[in-house]
Image (cartoon, rainbow, N blue to C red; front, side):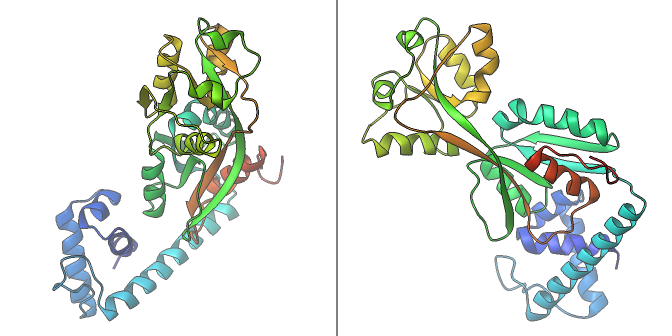
Length: 300
């Protein structure tokens, strides 16, 4: 068997889906089934219980899965070790990020990183947080960048920054002349919010609830860019991370107002799969995000 066959089987077990395993390995669903049958024929064992509707491993299948994972880990260690001995920092690093981090935090990180490591290809995709966690767990992406990161037994979670949250309004709104506003003041205005499943929305709702305030949003959006456009036309006020409105504030399209009586912050986190062998590019990128440091062949 080739290394790729072991990876297909591990992906099949961890996703529990023939279609997802096929997509992860850029092959057809039929090819996954064929590889599974070929593997069972070669080792003369049944690894999947065909009598179950959902994917369920036999005792031999569970043993094979653990052995396949060890083989893949050893292969990764071999490849990574050889590259590090050659001091080669290259390859593709896949990153999935929520929109606000991708648009307002990540670009400068990428510019700084690629100046030192020009042979590393950083592939960035924008996703909702729920998709990012799923894709990191299923090895569909190397690194996830999310707000309000939560712990998971199979993930390494590192908080690298906390953004201050501020109230925003249009220049025509009465808040634009205020030095600060309280949550009670905001609760009496037309409020524009993120969609309910977005972590930043949950944190804002919790802050209102803690002060026993009830807010019914007049609009809900799944990303900060669209939300800002609604505030710009004076459709209401909102609460967003300060870093996401710096450009609009400089241009005079929006006004940001500090929120008094409460400290609202949005932690930003980096997540990746526990136990995996980190390729050289990933070993350099993670500490850079965490501390703003770049190491190249022993030099800062």
